[in-house]
Image 1 (cartoon, rainbow, N blue to C red):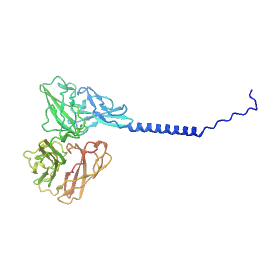
Image 2 (cartoon, rainbow, N blue to C red; image 1 turned 120 degrees about the vertical axis):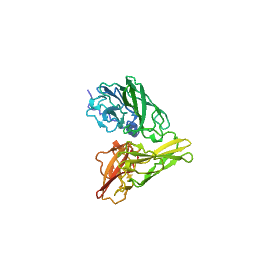
Image 3 (cartoon, helix red, strand yellow; image 1 turned 45 degrees about the vertical axis):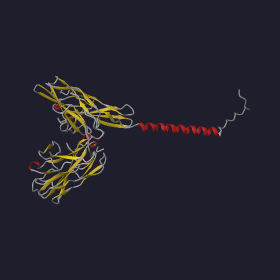
Image 4 (cartoon, rainbow, N blue to C red; image 1 turned 30 degrees about the horizontal axis):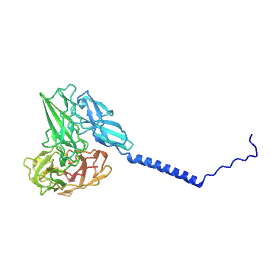
Length: 436
């Protein structure tokens, strides 16, 4: 029994030193927590592909294709989602395949003759990143006489001046012969165009390839049967040790864009070892800036438009040489060319202004014309880095265009159509820089 006379023992008051020490420990604990959370945030970066996705499987109707997500530089292990695309035989005009969002895809009858594309999205603490695999196909029918069972693979360092080599892939049956066509594509390995004279199993990227992905169209022959297959694609070619002069200002074209008028090409500005020498080629392309062919005999610095050029666009290539090598640079496309004596013809190309970055807006000028137009209409084209192989951007019909993530790695060109009375004439603008 406790005596009632016993008083409760007084509680000891903490010393000022102890209070300060406790407060200090609390502060340091908070600092440590903040630093820890800050360190975590600083190391969480958006995933980026260091090795592009790829596809395995036989490129024929009824066969199953399997996605390989590639390698990513994420700080933590990303999770992947997939989207399969159906494209035409050249790898253009791609559309998402309804419901094809798994890591595998079974090739359907409507895929025959076309190509199949793959997009992989990686999600991690730092955000999401997207990368595209090389195209697969063209797709053979269900009972092919010759079929690609594994994609040809491009090996080597994707850098200017470093040699790349492509394998033949795997075929059933074994083909009697194989040929190669190297193609220069946008950074996503889409919208490709053949590289002139690049027809071997190896290729050394030059200055014109920097910023582009490269792919190879491998054509196999077995008896009377011919079948083609797209190789895996490289990542965008990096700048390497320059070989030959370096173009610092692109070539350009001036003149009236009408039949009978003379166009004059400027070689642009170059840095070189000594004084560079130049040779020239003029090209005739279709309205979209694709399917370009050299114009026979047009190898001087000027070219006079002829009847065959009406409705076509015209390109100008400059081959600059010094003691270290030869490099080619291209002008923006000019035209389409108007008929002789047209009431309305462009005398200067429109220009595109604005910051070439997703989320920013580009604006095109109206250019200059032989008569004062009453009105203008606009269309925007998404092109490769050389402002070639363009496709129309759906719904982009005003003088301004807001850039989206789909434009990354591309240049944008506006087609300005001027109207004066019954006369209407279109002209390509100068291209934007490559969109970041």
